[in-house]
Length: 49
Image 1 (cartoon, rainbow, N blue to C red):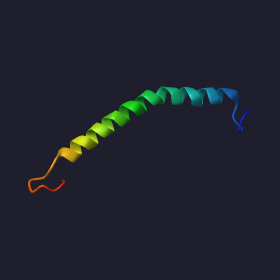
Image 2 (cartoon, rainbow, N blue to C red):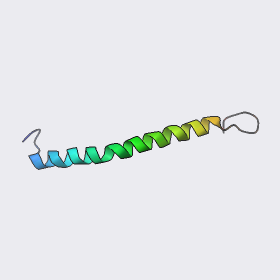
Image 3 (tube, rainbow, N blue to C red):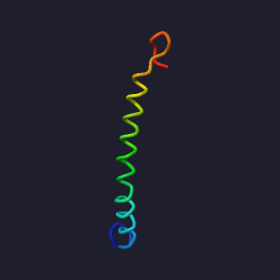
């Protein structure tokens, strides 16, 4: 028992982290691409909109 959790809960937590890493990487790539697209867009008068 570590920090009050049984061993199988630690397996569940580790499995959830391992499964979520590829989704986080995919989201970060999508987010940076979205930010670059937003930065490139300019309004009619040159202001960010």
